[in-house]
Image 1 (cartoon, helix red, strand yellow):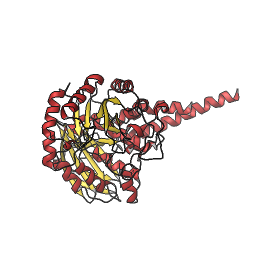
Image 2: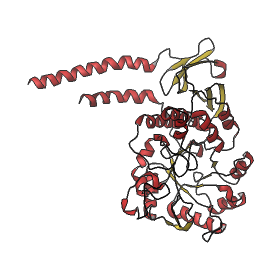
Image 3: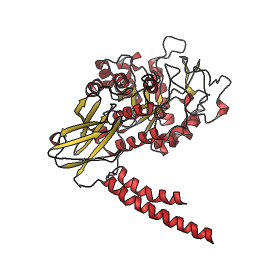
Image 4: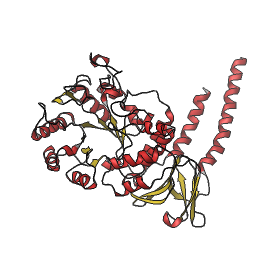
Length: 463
């Protein structure tokens, strides 16, 4: 009873001081505002053991492990609570081998029986839509020279069929540059986007900027940012690494979907472990940056719980749903902040300070500015920035740790602990540290409440 009463008293304070709520009702999300989660169906969650098949073998990294569409449905709330707005699911199509052996699609209108049925897919889409989440399919086009190869016209017809029959929200195309840009222009034209919120994203084998630009012009909404992945792996998997190279990528790349690992790479956690670093701390820094820079992040299943794995297929283990909550809570809070401030999804990006693993940058959109400070070093850091570069005579209020920074003599002084990040909103000066004051008020109230409850219990026991 005591614990429940304390929780009821705490909740209003935590909600009030955590993240500001925008007064204006939000419209339907644009591409930039989405937050994407990629799922390997077979490795995520087994919702129906009856469809595992005799060839399922969880000990074999190249075999089926039992995950299915029903399993995803059962975990939609888990994904939603982390702030993800769209889910990409790996290829659902039946192949002539296991999905991890380079198998070729046998039938573009048949769901692999290991994953469930067509009705299961419809159920997943319906349940996701109830939660205001989108479902995108990984649509395999790289069939090579084989008996199962299909013509480009057939590929387009099959893609149209799935849109019309299931109401999916988009496609993810792996290695889209195995087919020329003219095909994708035709694909977009004949597919006929149902709305501005039907998305086409992809990855490329050739990640030269001019190639990326050509595929974006051909109709792709976004291309996975391989350059960001390479530089982020170097910068964030270890401490005391500079931001200079990853910042250059953010400022210059045409790619607009950052990621830190996926089905083609070793896990970010593996990189951290090889550097003798704690994966949780390293992931917090990586997510803090990835969620606050321009672009639409794509998070690979399990990265939020620091899943480990080497080169494919060892990077695709079964999901573990009994993780440490700290990292998930941190990522969820970042997602809420990102969703609350348009400047973090639509705003300009300007670096105000960058040196030896410490970065301070601002995102600005219309009359809103947010300041992000990330300390990727092994020691506390202090940085002073001229008020002229931010705004004069204001207060910067932290959204992650709650500390405040005020304009003092034309400067803002930021003090950040090692391996920490903070996101600041700009407010009028109050001269009051609101989180600190709330603690001074809250602690006595909780103590008084405890005494009252203890007294009542004592009276009952006496009777």
